Length: 340
Image (cartoon, rainbow, N blue to C red; front, side, top):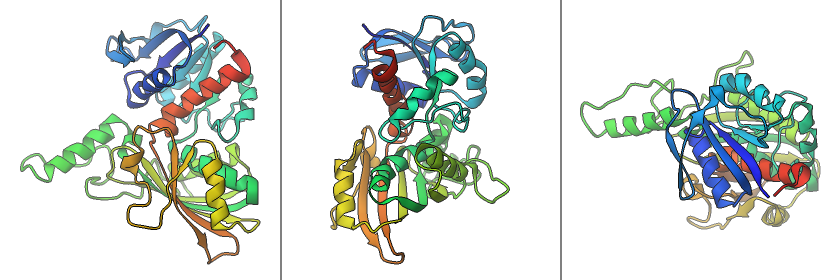
């Protein structure tokens, strides 16, 4: 016996990836509904070898459905997620709307699976920000061993984190560099993204941080440990898919780089590729389509008493969004609903 599953926002990048991953992982589905806004209603999406037409989110009745994977923005989520939850359908939400709600668990299954038991306060589970998700997968096994005091992270985030329009802008600006008359001025990003990097993701806050940087701080504390100090600089780079992070970690106790490497090799969801030779590391293009969070460049930081540096790469549409949502659904099935 399987689950009755709804994918909301099935025509977007993350929604389509959710469908791919549900099929790849053979998630036990008894019935599947794919929904979109009225503007996209009727658009066809693929699920395995099947082609499905999207239904109208505005008129859909969530009664009798087990789980709804939401891949729409915060405004639509604010309107429709409570309706689904009230109808008894557990919402797994990819937007930022509920991440900081103390009554909504924020879950990365490899890191804090037990927190899922708090889902029933609102019948909603939050999926973290893409840059946070891959980082905490890398931090958790090291924190368990040596207790993390402080994290300094610089991100190199692909344009797919900004959606299809952002990907199109990179493509058109790149093409415009070589085709006279096809130059494009920025519309999605505040400055040219092709052949450039932009140290600005989301809005600026009074502190001088951007909202993306604030998210990494707040979410790491909620998922892992409120005592961990985190400072982040988030940068958009001209890469289509795959987020990278340079992470500096300061521990309470000494942790040798060789032991850190061994710990990470044994940790769930991680693949270590760390050879001190040309090409002995993973780049974002190599992470595309993969489930794992890849760790490279593990080395001692001798400028602090107990420090480690590492390089962390992941497919942001997968672990940073769709894969993590499906893993939450699998965890909910195993721990709570127990149908599959």
